[in-house]
Length: 261
Image (cartoon, rainbow, N blue to C red; front, side, top):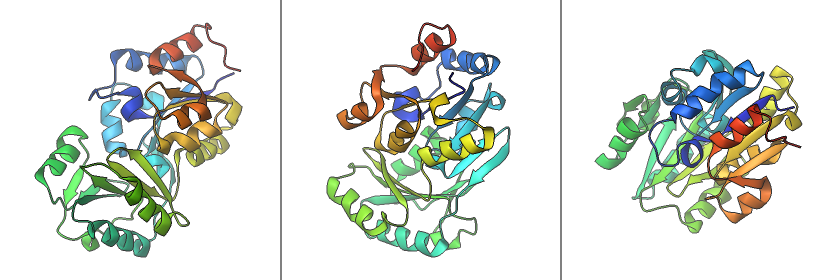
């Protein structure tokens, strides 16, 4: 029996749209009524996610910042803090690349020192993060929970290899999409394990959906995993099942037309 369904957001639920579908907003309270907890699992901050799901936010769980922060009902279930010295060293390395931007995330808001106006607009107007603009990241007093590298031209294998080689033994280093690399002390799979321990839900009672490599640990952890049809072939192989949209699969589960093994 499925007791928890987790889904990535960008590229999975949204697929380029800025808003969650009306169908998904209808399904979340239906899942709750059926004894299934829905969790959105995203690299985005809690403030942004809560706004996206504002009509139903109290009926669900939030795995934010790629697992660095877990929230339910306005209460913090878990948070992981990057040591400040590591964070400042990582930021310095990112900024050594003239074409890269930094997104520093705390629990309450994020911080940017934009080199390009388009990047500022993307964070504040499209993603709609609660954001403070700083001159220097050393001025940020809030604890660091996630650091992200953004490159408008796209993440190259060489760039990912550079940062994985330097930080991969200390942090989770994940390509979130073609423009982002995220650095945390957690990941979405680790978060589901924590949630399972808190709420007494086994991995085989969980289902998850994802489209990118920052979803890999989540898809590997759950009993029933779906990769989006647009996902990398390696992720599809890991998941074992694919779909074009999340909502029809969830509706089938609720209506008993799909019986996950």
